[in-house]
Image 1 (cartoon, rainbow, N blue to C red):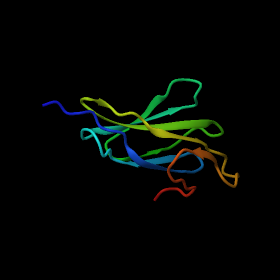
Image 2 (cartoon, helix red, strand yellow):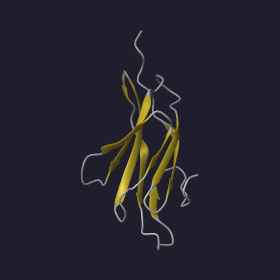
Image 3 (cartoon, rainbow, N blue to C red):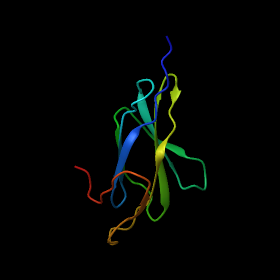
Image 4 (cartoon, rainbow, N blue to C red):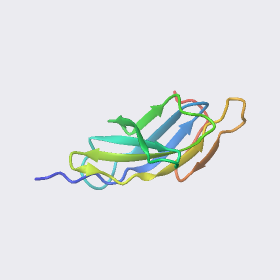
Length: 116
């Protein structure tokens, strides 16, 4: 019996700081069991680029570009396919002397503190 592709990941959040981004989400509630997750990034001038493939529902992306608006998407995958991306997180990482990073997030949580 064939395994169904996973459904869309759920309830994502993001934390970010000087040059890092931590994305986290919940496993899909629908579809087949995911083997892992793919994280894509784009600046919207080109197609999204795969920046991470992980097994757990979170990823820390260090050394992210600063002063550029970037957009992140997360999908789940297994041997039968890949889910639609969960929304999109758009944010710009600023220099450390800025009071607050500029972020336009579509859903989810954010924090300036570095994850522990």
